[in-house]
Image 1: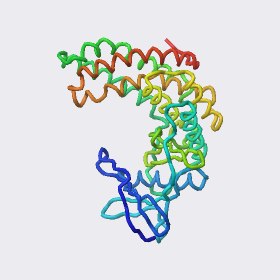
Image 2: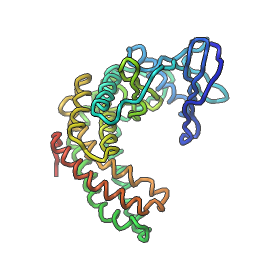
Image 3: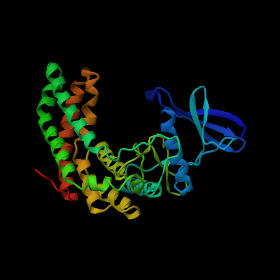
Image 4: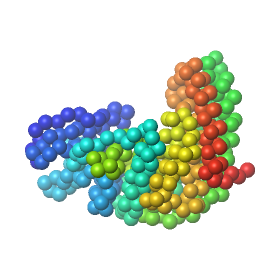
Length: 327
């Protein structure tokens, strides 16, 4: 492979390093990617990408080196080269059809990831048994928000934050109880190969529509074993949060599009709805105040007021989707 030119396609400064270049070669355009995670963790995602290609998933094939490796190390940093998939575009965000298309593409990705075994030397990455700990950690941070708001009472958003925190603490407590009483542990006990890989950062940027109208999945360096439908939960809640309205029609269409390709059994559906019930949106909105209390400003007041309105819609939607609440 001979490289004629290259241009920066993306950078990840928040990760310390990490970048993607489009390189023009005598064998067509390709992507050169600098991986920012530890080597053994990178081996896990590289092995996953190669496995998915061999399983006919719509992910970019990796280009091997002259000695047959799927990566190279230069100055202590790991690089991969993949085929550049031409003509990718974002799915339309203004129609439910675009959201459904992303969900069907995600389901296909999950289905084809079943049975993955990491290569020798890779550090296994699994979140399959971590859900209770994640829930408890979120709940603990809600207490931190209260301590911070009391310490910065003079900030514009502190009074409202203190007022709404009991609501979201109660939601987190109930989500923890519901998860413990659910089929979560039974589902997780099936093991990693039975559930396959979750992308962990799937969304409108990492699911791109090709010229054939099919969804290609990009940016796989964060993949991990998990109850893979958590990707679907994140996509649904993120989309609803961005829209500012928990539209039941959209939510049902997204779940249906996924289910038609990779069915979700009833017990798994309940676990996914519990994961939706956890106050993820509130946590995402407020979490950065732990690092910068100045964010407790008038803008935060407005954001909290909007969230309170949309949370009512969220609770109604979850009831209609069949969430079984427990006291």
